[in-house]
Length: 86
Image (cartoon, rainbow, N blue to C red; front, side, top):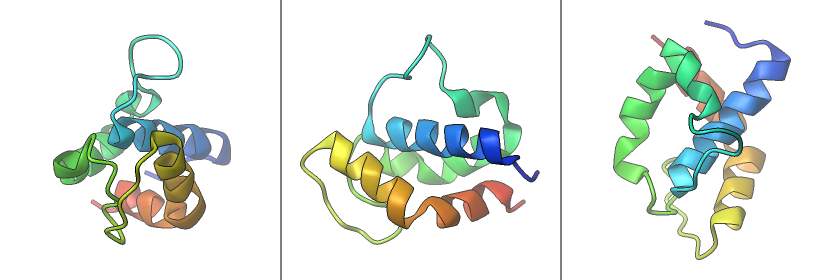
């Protein structure tokens, strides 16, 4: 499933927040939960949830905000590819 540009940013940011162990930005559900392809990506990233360790490069972070920014800035494309693969 190819995400449109508006949803792509929201899905990637919600996955980054989930990886950091933070609550959803709005409401009680993460934005990515409405996409089945994102759910498959989450199954692969589950061992990294809440550790603040980048699953792509192995870098460790002390602050959740720095971790989220790192994921969005450096690994957004890799995360999108992970969502798109079947």
